[in-house]
Length: 172
Image (cartoon, rainbow, N blue to C red):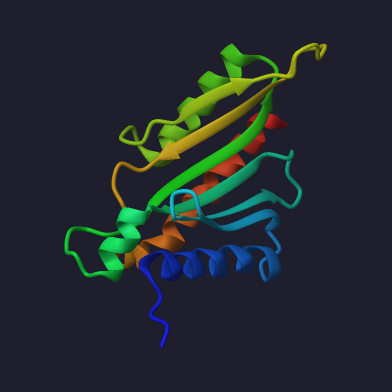
């Protein structure tokens, strides 16, 4: 009989709650989904991307990763603290980097607290005029999560929605 891993259980819980926001509540539109086994390093990756239904096109991504070490530690019951890495990413266009990036940092710090500062990576297409930057904003948690945090997922997803709405106001 198949015994689901921590990764599988968290993935299903996140997936269910995000799909409910799409199919039942009608608040978001899921735009992309990744469920991958990385054969080169034997790792698992799940990501789901979505935007607000009537938003300015800002995209949120919830990404769950489990390394070979985490998966093996759990499956072989090697002790330790097996779990998954959780990353939150937001993607938005930016024209005025000085103003917008500072506003992004302030809004996300207010929602997520100073312990979780956002990292912003700007890129642009060479030759594009006027220059519009692509801002990839990442919140990386400093610890692994496991099934003990399962009941925190609704609050986490609520914070992702608040962040998406705040960033959407900046993008309008």
